Length: 198
Image 1 (tube, helix red, strand yellow):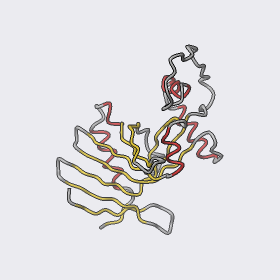
Image 2 (spheres, helix red, strand yellow):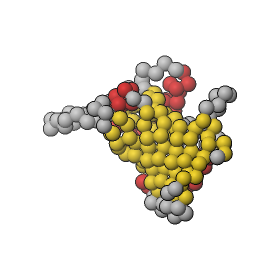
Image 3 (tube, helix red, strand yellow):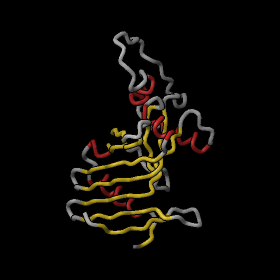
Image 4 (cartoon, helix red, strand yellow):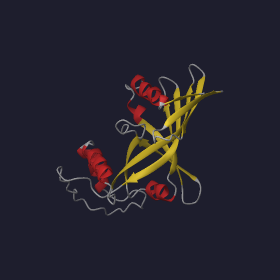
């Protein structure tokens, strides 16, 4: 067992690059714990790493069920499978929800930058009807107005996923490694790696 800083991140970046020609390579599954205690899973889009860290950014609608689930239990797992390179990443950790009520200046800025990074079409999704509620046949046909210079709408949330364990499997090489975050006195996250059976 060796101790290194986020060695799995370079594996993930390499997998993203080698599978980059496939549009769905940025799609991953996010599992949370539902209010009934059962797993709740959905597909989300990888939006990048927080600069200089191993924290993963995901964008979502604050009206979606996953927000309530994460506020009740912030622990989650993502699963990513890359079809070209036959690699799987199962990443466990804790998610922080950065929404319109966030008062932290740094996180407020991150949310605003995340909002400005998405296309106008993607922004419009956050002005639509609340996700998961029954569809009403008589929906208003008025196009919602969106000021391109204003900041994020209330429905836009940034999810900051902070990993503490990564289970990496390469089916081509039959290699499987388990990476675990270990506490450090300096506050920097260190990782230990153990090779395990596929």
